[in-house]
Image (cartoon, rainbow, N blue to C red; front, side, top):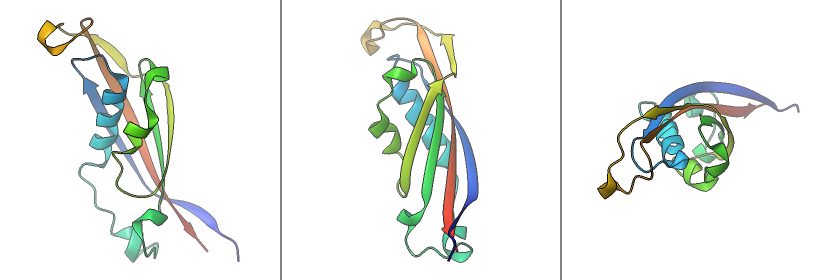
Length: 123
């Protein structure tokens, strides 16, 4: 019996950390945005999975300062699945306004983009 991986859905999102200059925050918000308005009944009704943790969820995020991203915090946004994360340099740094009471270290706003791909294995 041959097992094939098939893409079920690709979701895209954008996230911003306006204050704090945390690429992890921007990345997690991008992933949350990507999955915020989705339901995946096809996981059961079409692909025939019996448990949502059988999904394979691959996340790709482009964000400034990718080496600072804390992987576990970004993947924690996803409620189900075998999760992987690929982080690369990208997104955008935009000029904002540093506010001392928000512990800003500079006036950078970090913008991340994400693609979340859900795969299922079929026979």
